[in-house]
Length: 114
Length: 115
Image 1 (cartoon, rainbow over the protein chains, first blue to last red):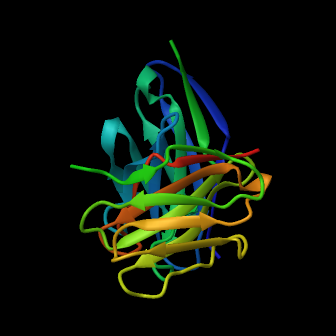
Image 2 (cartoon, helix red, strand yellow):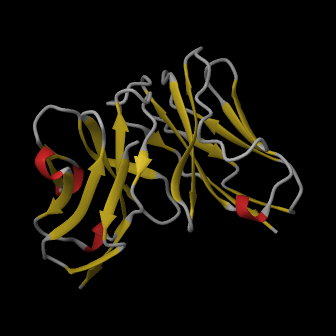
């Protein structure tokens, strides 16, 4: 069965610093991978997705992620954090045989200090 | 354009009562998903509808939970005889097709509190 592990339930960075949120997956078949962001009292918003095309995926708000099969990782990065990036981030996997249902990691809360 | 709409946004009810949560997906989206978000369990898949196919109910935690989707559009998630552990945010999502590479679009959720 597939699974997702997000390392670090809480990450704190200074404004302007690099953001790195870690995600490792387990899947028996080539996975589709997603990063979602959740602001307080809102649903999830798609940041980016990997669906077996380019391994470096660019998303909204300056975020990007790199799929590394050898490391079973899909870490999310942003070169320079902004205060508005403070939110909870979820990594998710969907296997091609599972009809699209998502398996989520536990989430990482990102805090941005001025 | 209109996104996924869920109602009510908040629901407080007494233990033992039945509740119905509604989801109105994006027009034209054939796939609809329900997830539950709770402090202890994170985000969990509950049920998935795709067109006229039989739903995937593999994530429903007990037989107190059921869902239907009428006319391939609006969906209702029903919880019977609610328990305190049912307190959570229930999120609905829809996608253009039920393919694994399609992004899902989420509503803002229904926050359910069981007293």
